[in-house]
Image (tube, rainbow, N blue to C red; front, top):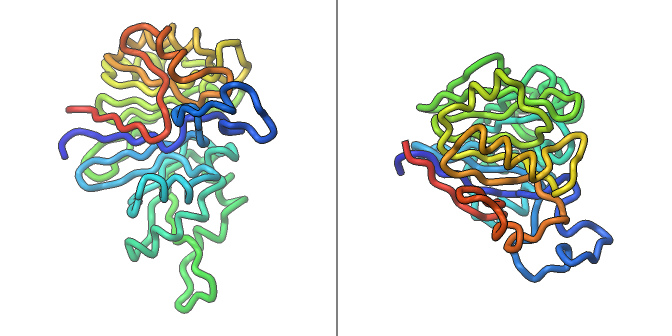
Length: 259
């Protein structure tokens, strides 16, 4: 396979869709594209598989899409919907018979250590319980995974500093309420953009759909996929209203980005 393959493991917001205890039209929808796990993607190139964020549904997502290998994990930030599935990575340590690199900012690394410190300890010779075997790789600028360079894109998620990522012509920017001017510059020339679009109405920590559309127009990618979607938008109905080259992503969707 040439280029990059992107698999959407989850396109929902922090509560997922359907939400617990909600019987609204979207939560009750029979359209499978309206079922949204917490947000995460899988990036594949050159035989390598990289997971961006570890959602609470990670095991379910991996079984649903027959994922049997993860080589690296990359984090956008340390909120629960993006990190709490980390323990399930231990199964991939067994499958590849080795450690897995975990790429994160200093702040996210500290949060991971507070919650999952055991996962970054040296492995026991004869463990009674098999735990993850992970190695910290701190993001302090551009970094290399396999044959490709990853560029961190600084974003604001309300007052929180989070990271998006650009890999060649692909950019992934979830959980964003503000894109700094310097980050717009880093996104120039993007062909395929994945961007936060929570709901139609404004929100203090996320782009609304109208805000996301305006940001996508400014970035000018050939194709934009919106993610981190709440239960206020039907997939099919919303996509019918969007500008050409923009659409809501859905769980299980595969996108290929050519070099």
